[in-house]
Image 1 (cartoon, rainbow over the protein chains, first blue to last red):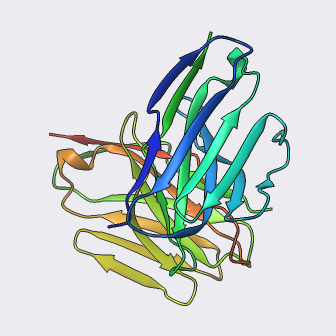
Image 2 (cartoon, chains in turn purple, green; image 1 turned 180 degrees about the horizontal axis):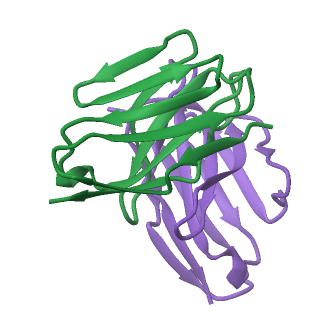
Length: 116
Length: 113
């Protein structure tokens, strides 16, 4: 149980294009999902908190117009990187919290984004 | 906000020996402390967690201890095996329900055969 999937696992795009990453909780409902970013050999940095049916809450320094988050259902959240640039290249990881649990977060396998 | 410090950054132990990773946190309101194992190119996997009302928790070869007064918590892995080699992250969650996790910088654990 507690499986979180992400799609795609890898994506390469040209500078200036937009990329959408999906995060799904497969066997539980998640009222809250989180998006993290991880650079090589570094830790995970929280980008935003996504609550089903409401606007996402962004961490300080994260551009909400660049990283669009939608959490339309209890099992799906999407992150769209708009007008991607090479500096947006990173490992993006989502996590989901089971609505029955106050704290436990289960992470997806991550999406490797490379912007050329 | 919360700040989590993790040590050491790299830890090499002989197979069968124990490994200990330590973390400190800054926000006394933090009440949940999970540990994650991350293998190369994969997402973090929850291995154990502890809440602030508990001092110690054990799951087979893995244990976590929490000292709320000193604001530090530790991961203990006994009888280490080659498959334990990975990067381990500690994290803390501040009170409030909806907050995300603040992670330590990670410890690269290497199990020498």
